[in-house]
Amino acid sequence: MSSTLKIVLCCFAIALSGCESMKYSALEKVGIHKRDILIDRIEDTQEVQTDGQEQFQSALEQFRSVVAFDGGELEQMYNKFNDEYEACEQAAEDIEDHIDSVESVANALFSEWQEELGQYQNAKLRRASERQLQNTKQRYRQILGAMRQSERAVQPVLAILRDNVLFLKHNLNARAVGSLRGELANIDREVAQLTASMQRSITESQRFIDSLKDAP
Image 1 (cartoon, rainbow, N blue to C red):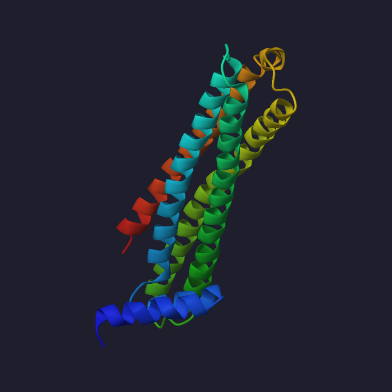
Image 2: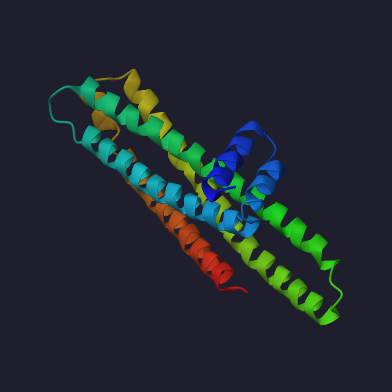
């Protein structure tokens, strides 16, 4: 059977399967192991976090444009701001889903690794593998903590954006817009904190990926 056909059949099996363990088994049959999947999912999470940084920054810039309103189509500016807010909501969902997928495969990998320790006949090799497992789990807990922290940092920003979107929705006039200028510094600060939190998560994740790739 050709490699291409194996991959096609594997993808078909994954599409039919709703169970993560079945997905992992199908992938392992074509040489893609849980450690590879974990690295891929962490890299995908880094990408959505980077996209999230850009999206929340874009929403901030659009809000800055709204509060700087000096004539023109205010409703059009509101619609753009609302679109940015909804895109932020989607970005938050994407980040959460990707972190969940990382946690899923990591749990499966560590469970498999722990179970395989009992299969060793050589006690020295088993102890070495057990130490490596514990070290990997410790590093993983650090990156998962950083990921979850960045995920939590999203919610205050979404709440502030939502409040301002709702206020503008029913107050499309220059006076109302002027009253929101004081909100700009607050949103600016929250977005900066969120961006920094996501960057810490991305950096920690990269260190973890490098350690996995360097491991035997």
